[in-house]
Length: 245
Ligand SMILES: [Zn+2]
Image (cartoon, rainbow, N blue to C red; front, top):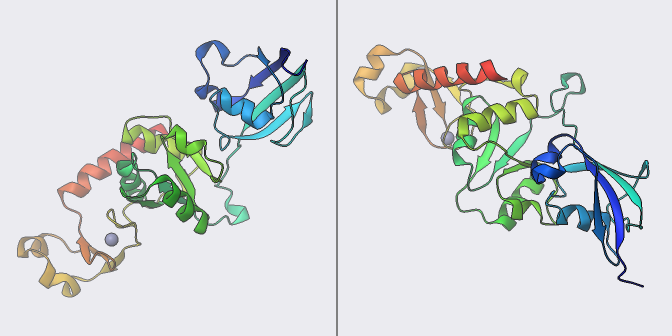
């Protein structure tokens, strides 16, 4: 009797559908299960990571993740409704921890003034610990990372091209009004300070000194930025991105 087939009707909402096979998307579907199964394990077995959903309803009532499924249950699963941009609530600036596949996204986020952290040396355990210590949110393309139980806040990045990933993150987390172009060091993410030419004269080529009068300094990397050709390329990229968000 313990292993008799039981059925569950289930529907996923919003972008949770991205994790499902096409035939299961945007519709209620019937699945069989056997034995004792928690709703958390069951949802995970369908490929939807636990960090991606927020609310589970069984027969119209909210349940916790350890709810044990019953034969004939009707289940609805909803994503996080993320709003970081409610300035009236004075929400602190988000810190994004980019996984090993997202180095370019980390750089692009810094380019538009977001606080992003990245290292190509972090393993799964390290990035989880660091993000928890700083109350940050992990951005990842690693589905195995998303399945870990010690993970708290994370978002699966859908787009593949870094430029599109930046559009996706700005849109998903409502960051448009927080954009401060070129306010951070692209290498380490530290906030830059504007400095006068006299402070940097010895560290920049004479030609640069003659052509530019605004300089920005990262005290962590001891690096100086000015608005040269690289800046113009990035400026064009930001303009393109802003048209899409
Ligand atoms: Zn730096």
